[in-house]
Image 1: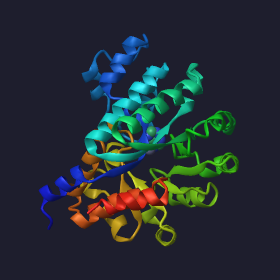
Image 2: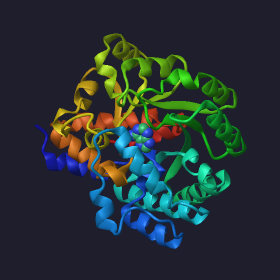
Image 3: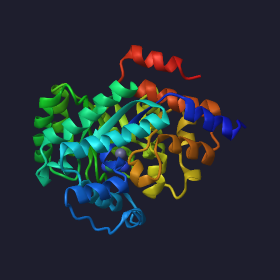
Length: 334
Ligand code: ADE
Ligand code: ZN
């Protein structure tokens, strides 16, 4: 067995990329409290401890309710800048050299926040990250799948004005009962506009949602995808085409998909040759950023050093970096 300290050391030191991170999910209670005061937005908590103790979730929907409430404190461009910059400081701490972040415009626009305000705040922080720390990034706009197609087409139209800042579109929010087919036309239009596509699929929902995301939404990566192990044919397809699965272990435990980290299926996925990697999803709500996800998961699943290397390599290979950049980073993981 590889020494756990050696693995922890490797995780801390290795350059890494993160491919599944909701920027609104990096809103720490301290910043939520500060912004609620700055913007005079009421939140249903008296102090930071009360916020933290509300983070006991039973499933995805129980989390989403609190997550959308938390997002209400984000109003100005400066707020989106501060939010993103705080995440970037965590990236620096964790030695994340490239990150691909999701944002949810439909949780802001109905509150009267302009698309421009959201994307500009995020973009300014990401540009500063590259200038100050050399951390590179891509931005993916997510559609909220509990909303109707019309609302999603509206934000797609707005995103078309920011093609220089947004590389792709994704699909998040409440999965069960909101199947990929509901968004087939929308994703066809997004692809015609030149956006890459990804989608949350098989987080809580059935393997069919992963099949439909691949076949109907033409996705380049499956976000989560952990339910794929229930379908042998699907595993074959995912392995054959080396489709990336952006797994988020601490998230899956917090949202009760697995009762404990020791029972997570990540190691089984790795052993089947699936292209999996580790991500933090909504770290402010789920109790850990990328390195903590990697360290706790390595310990709980008794991963070997070569497993951890594979996870980090898979992440670079699955990113939207160009091939030359991927090759350069891959050389640095040893
Ligand atoms: N939005 C933020 N985090 C999410 C998750 N884990 N699943 C679906 N939608 C989300
Ligand atoms: Zn997610």
